[in-house]
Image 1 (cartoon, rainbow, N blue to C red):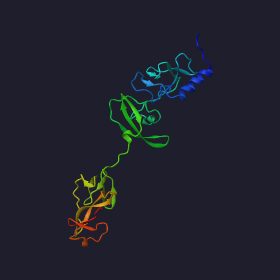
Image 2: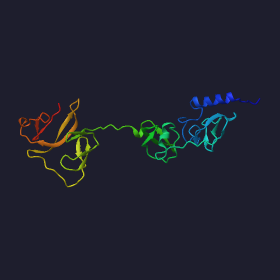
Image 3: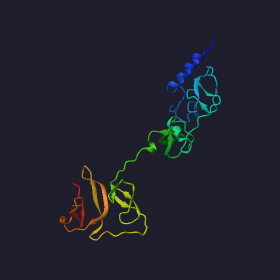
Length: 246
């Protein structure tokens, strides 16, 4: 006997489609490229049993828009604009709600895309998997933790990898594990005051007595510890007053 469906059954099916995970072939279900060109839910449609009548004002989905479950049929609202796919250059904020509704990609590298959504600033991490962009937690947006010592220049502490001013000129340099290096080469050097010379000293000692930040500055010249009256540079080492850890 053929089955018939009244309005209550159609509404029940629709509610179940929305509430039950996977019933609509929604984002996060299945692998992209596995026979579904575009998931029904990602395209703004609903999935119902194939032999059930469509809800009012709905029509069969566009070609390539399918439910993950082949026993279900996808229906889209008549006159509704299709939900766009996202990419690094196109509506990346869509990935926050529909992480698997990505546009096509070609083995592109992951990227962290700044965007705005609901009045807030967001960083959306996008990766290319099986020919489609996917939004993921952290990924390319995961914070990087400096692994080396920081640099102290003119009393300011900088993280490993940061751009720092050259303490002896108007140039800019990089902090690389406590060393001020890779400076630009504008001719604007400044000599250290008399009685001092360029040098380095530990500015912050860690819990294991390792140096966590290295100061690069003009250090006082010395012959013994008695010449070092600054509590931050109290030891005469290699002819200059420096700080000692441990």
